[in-house]
Structures are given as structure tokens and as C-alpha cells.
Image (cartoon, rainbow over the protein chains, first blue to last red):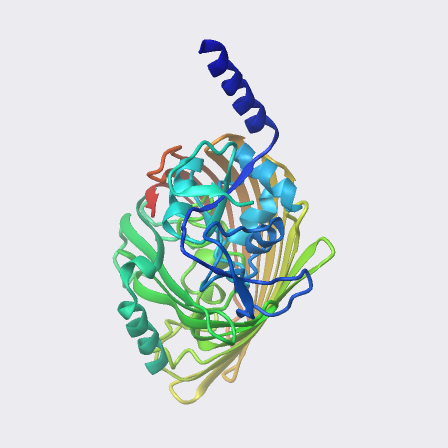
Length: 154
Length: 345
């Protein structure tokens, strides 16, 4: 029992040290997802297909959301929630998106020319709570251990 | 004005859980010399009482809905403070008709400067005079109008552009300023237009902003002033714990009564993060104001500011800020020590 717990802790620590996990709202309503190619130019809903309840958000969608582009999921668009720029998780997460944490903080400021709707939560627990309450939404954490109201995005 | 009221009414009809509401509430206290430091946030003309303690509230509410033509978002934002009173800073409809472009109509911030919103950043009073002083910060405010904006990614750069036309008399928030001067009577004409360009280097966070704001104002039906404001700013994160900001604002104003004004604000700022939840910033600012013609006077205001901000590492989103500003106004020196406690929601 003790050895199993130790193994689980080691695995969790390894996951936390090297990567982040993208977490999406666990809303289980049936959704129609816009079929979106990298060169898509329309923000409005086009023809899509009804998906099972476990809808997925691609890394492309996540990057678009944190760049402030409208990403339509069903009848709402994806809310991007980030942690403070100096949080180590932010730095790791945004490297995956090709964006620095400082650039992400600049995108979230109200003095920008374009409203990007990115929210900054003070810590991971607050970010997860906001994502759970405001489906569809996305944030990141060091590990997914079944936090209430969220699931892994893809 | 009716459009603004319509936007407000529409937001009131939206269920509370569908509104995205954010804001900050706080209280500021300034301890200054007998004569408050000129150009500081709490400085007021002699006709108004000086209030060292000022509670304030800043709120923004928005609701977005998809349409067959693109996302439509209604946003309302306002601020109330004991010293500044209450005012609506934003009430608009934003129609994003394209991934790369959209249009806004309503009561709009000019988005000329990179002045921080209340509660953002490490300062209680921004070090730049054009961000904080009530006769110079016109470009940090806004008015009723229409804006067209665009955004695109070119390589590693995110480029945003904005063009706007404004009619401040429409929104009913009567202006207290006449160009860079205090207004002495009501406006009979007030027409403004602006252009802004912002580039952000995504891998590093280096940001550049260049803006232009033009104003054609008339007071009492006969006194005219044309004001041109050019704003240039740069921000460069040099390391995760260190970033630099600099801005230059040029204001030129011509009147029909023999007065010409040339003013320039130069501000540099160093921001450090020595530890998690701690921010330390140091800034130097110089505001030069020259009157020519009818009145040949010159003024130079130099100020040095240092501030420290601590963000509580809890979900309460509390922050504590302490700021010291010393200022020299044509040889007259003064200092102010400020303390702010705020909570974001």
C-alpha cells in the first residue's frame, strides 16, 4: 500500500515538473463544434456536426483562445483563464503555445486595442473553479487528479 | 446617449449568471506636505477640497452572444471614487464580424495610451502625468463614438490596429478640460479622432504602441482650440523578474485667441519581481509645458516614484501597495506617501 502510494506520488511529481495539463469545463451538454481549419477566417458558427458529450478542444483552439481570437464551442465561445505571469505553470504552459508569459499578460490587459477576454486567476484552484463555472472554458494546472467541474481538454 | 442607455438596459435584462463581472474595490490614503504634490492623483484645484483618503470602486460587466454574422458583446464599465466622483468609462457594443476585425459603437475608451486601469499594475498613481493628472489625462479616458479595429499575427508578431471617431458631447459626460487646460465654460463643439497601432512580440513580450489623437474643441461659441496628441511607448521584459517601460507624449495645441501650447511628458519605469507575489517599481517622469504667444510661461515638473506591491497568495485577491513620489514643480518640491488596499473580484 505504502509502495503504491509512493509510486503514485512520484508519477504525479514527475508530471508536475515537466508539463502542464490543459483543463476544460466538464459541461456534459451535447455540443456542435465548428469544423475549423488553420486558415479559417470566419468567427461565426458554420455547419458542424453533433459530437458526443465529451467535446474536445484542440491545442490550436487553445492557442487561438489565448491570442484572443473567438473560438466558438456550441453556442458560446471559449473563455481562456490564465494564472499570473510569474507563476511557473504559466511559463511552462505558454511555451507550449509559442507565447511568453509576459506576452500573455500583455494580452490580458485592458489597455489593449482588442478585447481578448482573457481572465487572470490568482492561483490554480481559483482558475479551475472559474473554468468549472463558466463553460466552455480552458485553463491549465500541473496535474489532473479529478478536480471538480473540469476534465482534460484532449 | 440613447444607444448607451439601450446597452445599459439590455445588460440589466441579462440573467446575472450570464454576465461576466469583474472589478476591484479599494481605498487609498495619501500623506503629503501641506500643499499636495502637484500633478499627483489627489491634487485638486483650490476650489475643491483636498481629500487624503479616497475609497473607490471599479466594475466591468459584459455579455457576449453569437450571431450568424459574428460574436456580439455588450460591455459596461465604470468607476467611482470619493475624489473623482462617478463616471462611466465604457458602454459599448462590440461586433466581431471577422476573426481579424470588428467594430465598436457606444461610449468608448480612446485606447491611445498604455495607462493601466485602476487596480492593475504596481502603482497607486501612475508615474506619467498624462495618465494621472485630471487636465492632461484626456487621452486615457474616452467618449461616445465608433471604432474599427483589426488584429493579425505576422510571424512572431501580433499586430493590432484601431481607428476611431468620437463626439464627446453626445454621451453627456461634460468635459472639464479644454485641450490641456481647465474648461471655464461649456463646449459648443467637440470633435475627436484617433489612430492606434500596437505590436506584440509573442515569444518575448516586447510591446510597442504608437497613437495619435486629434481634438477640435470650441467653448462658449467662440473660443477654439485644436489639440494634437502623439503617444509612443515601449515595454520590454528583459528577464522573468525584470521589465522596462518608456513612453513619450507630445501635446500641441493652437487656439484662436493667441495662445499656443507645446507640452511633452517623458516617463521611464523599471519593474522588478524579486519574489512571488511581490512587485517593485521605480519610475522617473518629466512633464514640460510651454505657453507661447498670449502667455509666455514655462513649467517643468519632474517626479521620481517608487512603489511596492504585494499580492496575497489566496483566492481573496487582496493586494497591498505602498508608493512614495517626490516632485519638483518649477523649483517647488514636495512629496507624497500613499497606501492602497484593494480586492479584486
